Image 1 (cartoon, rainbow, N blue to C red):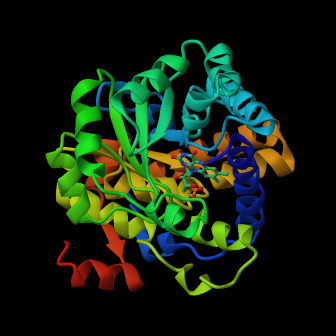
Image 2 (cartoon, rainbow, N blue to C red):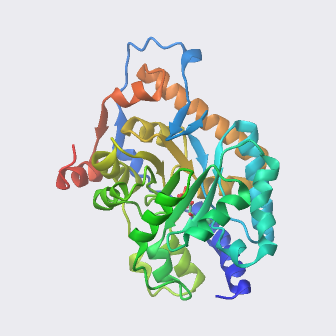
Length: 347
Ligand code: FNR
């Protein structure tokens, strides 16, 4: 694909994801309830929001997920996100760095995150067909603390210019995991991960999975909008809703793998429910970008502080002072999510 086409695609992803974000309504987290505790004895000052992803220590469970880089707008967005990440002590990921591996002029739009936040936690990002050499280059480019490898078959098959051959992906992931010396996060981009594939990833050495479930950014809808065609509109409902994917992955590999909940997360309650279900952290992409672009960086900063407060308030109402305790509290699963879990024999 040409450089110009790649850049145009990146711009269009931002444009159409923002148009779609505005109209998002459904929230599968409505099926999840954490049991209220009327005898909570919490002192809210004792609540600890710290967590960890393997060797990476996080002071907040909120991660700014991979979005952009490689274009002028991407540089500005990465700069603003990095400032917020630094101020609030959040981990953040850059968007796919493939563009910068092909054209060194794009490197600065990714490196800006490290310049702004020299001591922060920053994740590199590449697709699952990248070589080990490319993985090392992407990591070195931003002195990354972890590498995200994204899985996006639905997006690629829908894109006219997208990849159509995915053979060898599992072996490739295994090779990268075996040969780099920082944690690897395998992530979906909005269609979720099922327990069968979580087991394969765990067997191949993956220790952090970001489930990237459906319910938020929808790349099939984005590609439909980009192509100005309604031909594949009936595929727009594809994917595993986020809470369901979370339940699947934690049931299958929760003892071996740290799970990040993401895909359509919007508020502190979604995050708290994810953490109660066993997620180690929560990641936000489209909704954060929407606030940043529509209302500006200080509105996003305020919103993230509100999410943290909301998580704390939920923990106070449940009577738990850290995430280990929160995970012991009963969670009630209702509606479609209950039926899915029952059908899949997940308790
Ligand atoms: C993304 N996402 C993404 N993921 C990735 O691994 N590499 C990338 O380059 C991008 N690019 C990208 C651009 C834009 C504009 C958006 C909104 C998203 C996917 C993102 O990290 C996340 O997995 C999904 O968006 C699902 O989370 P949300 O958006 O529903 O919170």
